[in-house]
Image (cartoon, rainbow, N blue to C red):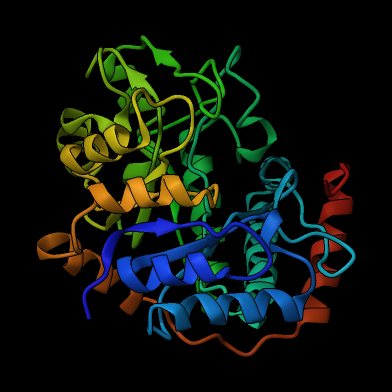
Length: 342
């Protein structure tokens, strides 16, 4: 049965009757969970199942942002704390293999947490390369400031998720590290020359271009398109994301409700689709906005449908895993980094 080219949030801990009716009628491709949707493990697992049941798709993707550090939707007392990405960078500087091992272990442990809940996709890894003076929205979520190092750690994170049977979403393509504003609130403009962007911001994404899914950046790169952020720029999607970077996987927008984007929700959605994103992401669970998004998104078809199928087919069964030993090893590595884990 056909699905529509958007991912939907949900308002609370359970699917309401109105939401169920909406999902049944509009059939989003997938769903995304936030802290407002999280109470206990049993409740989250029931919610994930109910969301899938609402569209009659037992394998529909259920996403979450579970990075570690300050971006974590699953938190104590029911779930452990994981380090922010910068910890892996610190360990990498001591010895590269330490950083890669810690990144892989952390992602593998996160995947184990998610798999128990029926959450199949984590919006991770980041390949953003921050610079001095950039907004702190990325900050210690980043793995470092050297493109090759960022790419290596991001690959280790991807491997850890894959070993746990969880799909990755590469973000924020083609790069958010240089942004001087938090895109939740306003639109940042980056005036760096294209050649410099290719050497720094874009380079880790090129190294990770084989990943199955990626999320766009709501950032204007004036050297490429002075009017539109990457999310709504056909030029950037075609020439940079699909072209120079070479990403051919499923491309989803960052959240359409973020204030970096201009216009109504319907206008933003139409612009995202017209620019070449395969999937529109809507996160806040507001039903009127969800209806506006659905009204502007097509049924998944053609190349977008093929990319979606390839992405889901790339998910593998979880490998055998000793969670206790992995956590102990990760904790020892965090101590060696000499920083707190959150």
